[in-house]
Image (cartoon, rainbow, N blue to C red; front, side, top):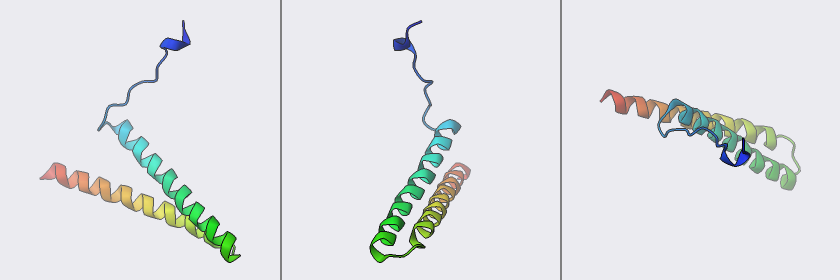
Length: 79
């Protein structure tokens, strides 16, 4: 068996696996972006609370956006 022909399984757009991977990516991105902003703020303002605050804010905002998207998708299906 050649490794050249081995490919990962395809994820169809709109499938549950696609939605899960999108949600996971958004949570990770939110935590990283707002955590980085908190770290930069801590560095320049010489504080120690902005990094954890940024991580929690990024987590909260990304979960809120995922929730709003899920609600909007379900409302579109009911109409």
